[in-house]
Amino acid sequence: MAFELLVIVVSYLLGSVSFSVLLVRLLKGVDIRQYGSGNAGATNTLRVMGKGPAILVLVLDVLKGIAAVWLGTWAGGWGTWVAVACGIAAIIGHNWPLYFHFRGGKGIATTIGVMATLAFWPALIAGIIAIVAIVITKYVSLGSLLFVALTPVFLIFTGFTAPELWGSLIIAIFAFWRHRSNIVKISQGRENKIGSKVKEGNRVV
Image (cartoon, rainbow, N blue to C red):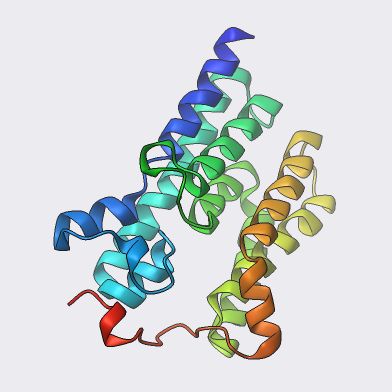
């Protein structure tokens, strides 16, 4: 039991590595949380820094989720509570990072890594629908919420384990909580669309 708890803590510490903060600090010497939406994630990196850095942040954040689930799988087995808990811990770390005063991102990229590793096909189907929604509406937040909402639905129709199903529901709750302001903005038509530029005073140049 002690070892399982240890890998969960390690997963949180891994998730706490905010690549958005680190990369922008490395490239421009500033804190990305002071620019754009103030969010430490790939979408804000895209708005503030452009495609190249955003893609790198996205890939690295996804890899955090993958690594955490594999760590839990090594410790407890495939589809177990330990594997799921490690994935959730990495998402919590991304959202509330220990190294950056608990001010992180919204965890979607890390969630993609976690869910794609735990339940590839349900996550893939949900991901395709989410991408289509983003292409049509230009709202990344809407696509993100569709992804986390639909993955548990598709899990129900597959042979995945109870920990994976309940874990996906917990992850969905986290995502909706972190996106609560985005939900309000979408309903009011004020949500930023992908490709939109931040004000010059809020952009790193």
